[in-house]
Image (cartoon, rainbow, N blue to C red; front, top):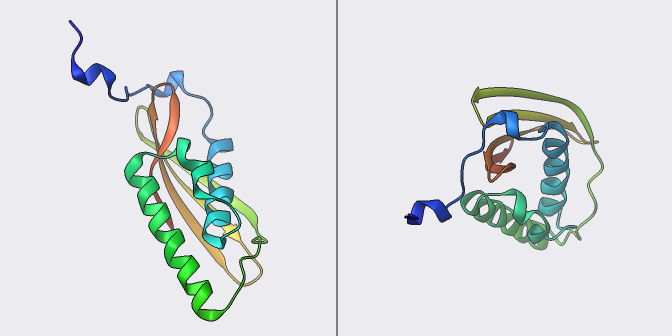
Amino acid sequence: MMMLEDFAPQPTPTAELPDPSPLLESLTRGVLEVLAGVREADQLMRWFTEDAFRKLIARANLSARARSARGVAPTRPVYRILSTHVASPADGVVEATVIVESPGRTRAVAIRLEGFDRRWRATTLAVL
């Protein structure tokens, strides 16, 4: 007999998931472009859980309002990824910090990925 829980996202062990490094760097680039106003957040939706995606949208809206208040047009961010630090606190979970350098500042992007339905999804993201 099938239970309702069978239709919810199913956790996936690390051994059945791809290397998270390319996704961590792609998500970092995508998130910085969303916050800069040059990429639609919907393009990243499939890589986030619903709660994490809502928080990204809220942060992007705040960035858009701040740009509007200053009269600044959205511009593609110029940066380079300096390093990616990855830890796995549990099976099917990766916590990473991606250090990004731009002309005016260096930032850290903290991302937690969890394996669901045989792919990584960001459950938490913070741009510091």
